[in-house]
Image 1 (cartoon, rainbow, N blue to C red):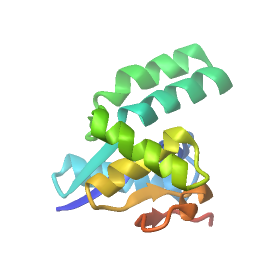
Image 2 (cartoon, rainbow, N blue to C red):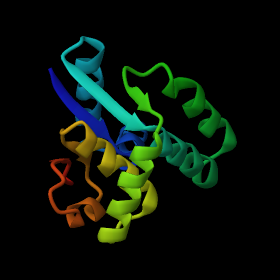
Image 3 (cartoon, rainbow, N blue to C red):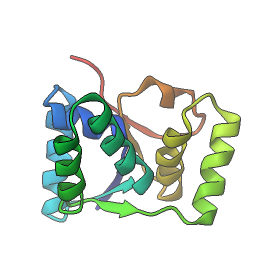
Length: 135
């Protein structure tokens, strides 16, 4: 079974229907539903999606995400203290957002690719990416 970590960028692209990310994330979600893929997302990134939707769209859309995020075939990983230290170390070493450091640290913890198209992650040495590029 392949394991992947989703970052906020991938989720927001999927929610917006923007291709190619929407199709690729939908395929990963289907594969996870069928038991062929194990998907993770950091609880910090789940919160980032909520914040983004609330700030840039509407409170009802953000609340819809809040309700539906728990029903997705994705394991929402709540960072433990060691995960927080790992994210902090990544943030101190590379020019990435602190919330992105949680996605990167989670991918490193599970020794799997991070699914993203956010160029910020290309700055993190040794981070395996499942890169989603623009069409």
